[in-house]
Image (cartoon, rainbow, N blue to C red; front, side):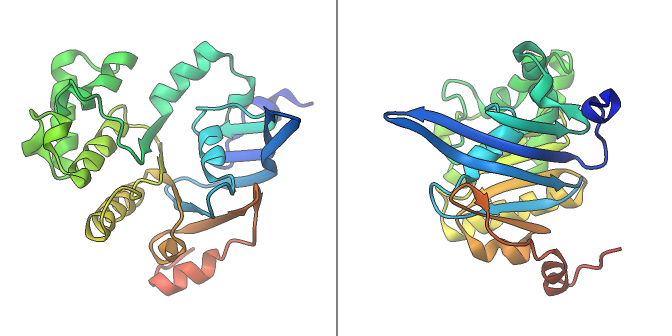
Length: 249
């Protein structure tokens, strides 16, 4: 195999080639994601949709390097995740991808500001004073700077999710992945969170969001529908763009 082709893919921000993920279960093996090939370009807002058990979170976890494929290859920004050892993968993950969870996963004993500075501390991205300044700027960007010195328990669900998004942006990753980020929110708050993710994509981030909601299609650039671990249908990119009045080159 050509080494340049294998290790330096750069045509797309995300590229999967024949990726399969299976897990051992009693009596055999369960395939959560069948052989899947796809690519995602930079600065897109992408929704992965499907019913529970369709493989959505599995796909997200593989792209975020939270899990590793059983078989197949994954490149992010041309870097081969499938070829990295755990130490290199951990460093890559901290600098390249921000993760937003349905349950927020803010550390309850740290203030909101401390939660947002934490990824910068782990990756030694900035010295403490500069990290604090950046964290406050991110909290301002997501609209909750006034909550900086409170514990997460003092915030509403929507405010906690905004704090989680600020934390995911701490190291300025090119890729943001969100696993059911509106699942624990009321309709009004969920709308505000989706608008924030949409704004981040417009500013140049690639945002990959897992959701049960198929009516998300008019808010995103691309829909990847999954069913039983397989991409279900062609992705109607041009139709979505026209419905939203977005001009494409």
